[in-house]
Length: 46
Image (cartoon, rainbow, N blue to C red; front, side, top):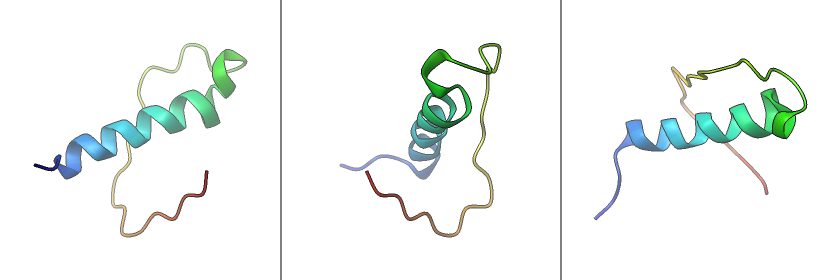
């Protein structure tokens, strides 16, 4: 079984919040929510 598109969006948004916006705790400490909306395509390299 797979997962829902909504759950995948929430997982990716949480990752962006922690690593990009909050820089692993170095900034934007009070940021509570990040939402991904209207995404047609996302290309990510790790």
